[in-house]
Length: 290
Image (cartoon, rainbow, N blue to C red; front, side, top):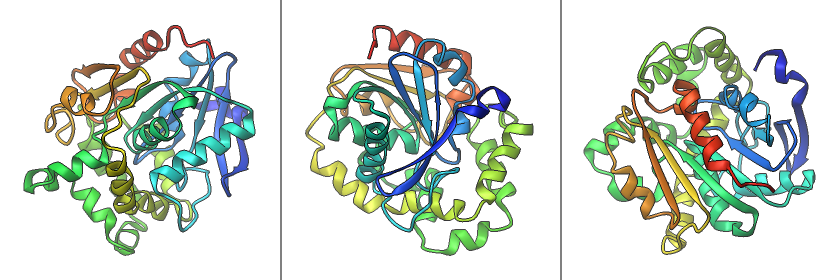
């Protein structure tokens, strides 16, 4: 984000943890929830565009970035409650919510649990937890090896420690259409974030809540999200766009749905195709006046 948003970083205690978040701009509030293996730095290409018209709030999720990394509380219902508590502290009632990857799981749970507080939802390159579990076979398991690896207690932390750079390089190269997309200052920023005390453990804890997340998703599987929903994904990511029928996946989740595949794009549309994503977001957000 450079110096442009350096004075927009804030922290406050909400839902029992110290949360770090960017807060910039005036207007109807929009919340951006990053995924793995990122932090709120992931939105550096969206924030300058969206904050011209909206108030943009981009937290580091529980366990990530500069937000606290407690031992527990990583089920998506509680992570959605992290956001509710943050919004309450900020005096914000209703939001437009944009989530990528893990952030999209939190955003989906927020949309189901707090229907009165969401006006519209964007989910980026995400297959819901319940659907991954339902479709899990040898092919899916191979693509989602990291999902399964991260569930193992303690071992990932031991193997990744001191190798954060190599670990992140693998994801950012494998998960992008152009493997050099995340490089230079951007890559260094993520490496620093994941070398911080507890950072790898925090992101692992997010995955290790999978069994609880799955139960929560099954409980209200029959209830669809009612607010306008935009699902975006990269056409070229093997574990999402190439493996799942994404229009069908999200039609199962949401009643009022728009779907847009993004060409020459992997798992990180907001970083790989920022101009295209920004145009889609600006269009979808039209009419959101808070």
